Image 1 (spheres, rainbow over the protein chains, first blue to last red):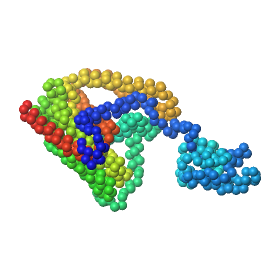
Image 2: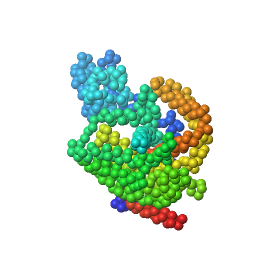
Image 3: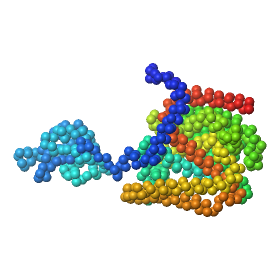
Image 4: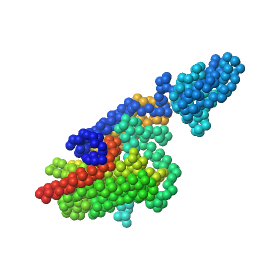
Amino acid sequence: MSFEGLPKGSCAKKTSFRDSIYFWEIVRGLGVTIGHLVYNIFHTSEMPTLQYPEEKKIYSDRFRGRHRLMKREDGSPRCVACQMCATVCPADCINIDAAEHPDSEIEKFPETFVIDLLRCVYCGLCEEACPCDAIRLDTGIYEIAADSRDKFVVDKEFLLNDREHGSY
Amino acid sequence: MMLFLDTLSKIGFMFVLIMGMVVVLIWMERKGAAFIQDRTGPNRASIAGIRLAGLVHPVADVFKLLFKEDIQPANRHRALYNIAPWLVMAVALSTYAVIPFGDYISIAGRKVSLVAADLNVGLLYILAVASLGTYGVIMAGWASNNKFTFLGGVRATAQMISYEINMGLALIGLVLVFSSQATPEHLREFLGADFLSGLRLTHLVAGQGDLLWGFLPKWGVVVQPLGFLLFITAVFAETNRNPFDLPEGESEIVAGYHLEYSSMKFALFFMAEYAHMVIGAALVATFYFGGYQVPWLPRPVLEAHAGSLLTIKLIGVVIISMIFSLLFFRRAQREKGKFGDARDREPGLGGALWLIVALGALGGLVLKPWGIGADGASLFASLIQVGAFVVKLVFFAWLFIWVRWTLPRFRYDQLMALGWKVMLPLGLANLVVTAVVLAMV
């Protein structure tokens, strides 16, 4: 075969005569593929394919799934609306409106806490930046689907009760 | 009137065969590709929970494509754009007219030849019509008004010109071998001539029923091995299948010539590709693998031993289907309650189907097939020959799929170099050697 027009050295090895007539190599290749076919016909249960909706892959504990907000013992959010996560977020997907907390030691709490799941890149920087462990990505939920864009913008209530919601 | 009805029923048989093969081939392609690549392949579509190992998927695909919106580009050439898929499909179907799928069948004392049109220029007809299919591709490519489809059309043209020559050259060697060979004794009355004509496909296949040196079937592949390799390569290129599917090379020109087609028009291109595969397989089987001929068992032998052959065949069917049935039932036992829904019934159903086949064959044995009469023997021979043709057809169609999932695509310059610098000289050399050998014999 000719290699005109290709840069020198890209086909440095000259093909041997046996390779250049293709025939034997094609027959060999056909042998490889038919071997796989016959093996798989008789060993269907060994197939690595995951039958997805029935079988689901369980990721490791370090997998960053959908976010959740942590609660205090009295059920209010741990978040103190310090804006660290919103500041560090590279995708700019967190939006917090702070309000004054009745307890003067806590100072602030988030009146709204909105995450746009479509913008989020699941980097986990918010989790690292949070000074009071209020946001985590440890739900393990990776099936994030909805039928319109605004359903991906999730609010405080949703994130606080994430475990119950499961996937949607 | 009789001739008209005969021809109509033969056309009907061929049409059903092709369309059935298209469905089976789509299934074979997807399932075969999956198994070759260690995947399970399509296994979701079902009728009442029964999935038939993915065979429901082609049906589901057809329904999906029928109901899809037909989106057309605004600046298309309206007439050519609409004609192109029909042309491709019509050409693909009309090639079958001259392919014999049996020698003859006796119905009420009449001998009906098993070919829709027994042209005396059948081989030229095939070469002419097969290359017409490229017109549809070119029209689709140009009329879509898109640079990628246009490139696909141009590639199809260049490829067709390069490989049509090799196809013809390979076939000339075959015609040389089989023309002016004496007609086999048992077909002399039916085919009429004392000598065979190499251009007539019924003659070409009749000549392949002989034995070479008394033990080798005189198939095209035996007398023309190099011609066979050249021909099958050219057929791969003509049908635009891998490794020569550059007209649709999706990694370079998106989807090639059928990029701008959607809905049922796309489905026509898709089906035409598979219909072309069936033609390619039929041509390879007819020219190089004896068409309907059963090796070592020409029609007189088949008719003489019809009783014992039929008995052996029925016993074989009983044993094999019993084994399959047992395998299925064992699997049903093993996988009881695996899914917890209708899919659990599948292995049991498969076992029951094979059991019915076994019982049917047993019922056939009860009817004493070893005492079959002369009419029955003739009918048996015809059916066995049609069956042999279909088996060869399915094997070569599978070869197309098998090769597609084994080889990568050629680069365009490699394609041209292979066609003009390798295959053309080889084809000419093959022709010269064949002619010299025939002149000396």
